[in-house]
Length: 301
Image (tube, rainbow, N blue to C red; front, side):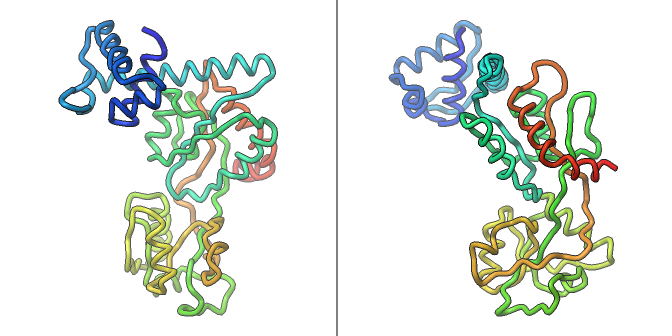
């Protein structure tokens, strides 16, 4: 078995097609198929359901695929670590974030890129439990997720400040005299909000319910784009993180801060604790800590 066979297996997972996977791996389709069959023969397992075309992985194939991701992540980490030992930091920082957390990763990525211009980035939006799972399996370097019940024997964390929420509205249709909006005002408005299950929706529900208020959800969606369309059309208002740049890209919309937004859970930057640490993760942590030390101390106190 060699590392390329595992790369071929992952390419097949990503493309779901033998020809496209072969093209991605820069080999012919017959050679690609032969290498996959060689891997099956070596493991003495059927990994692929085959018909006239790719029909998915077998149960054994799914289990081997999970290990392939882990081995390839470790392989990439080893190469990056070797370069770091030579004083040359390269590789791809894999960052996983809970949806609509309000954390803006771009200032941090710019900090990293400024000091280490050969580092690239891979961002994923994932449920909180998957972030911890992938950090533990070394298929993510950094997570942005909830830290209230974090196992500190397995993970290190740095608190991050949530930016609070704002009311996104079109002032041509909805008028607010104040520079900030109360939750009582919000409860009287038709709103476009994220569907139940998202962190943003949980924060909204928590803040309304804790005040004895009721949400008037005119529109619910699994993604933020339909919410923005609803506001832009004048149908209703919406609640989004204050650091969103949506209003800056639409001259008609305004984002008014909400008074006294109560967080539902503490948010933090998380990395795996213990052996085989990612140099990229350590670098990311150090840069964030150095540039937010006062903020982190304030949150921890």
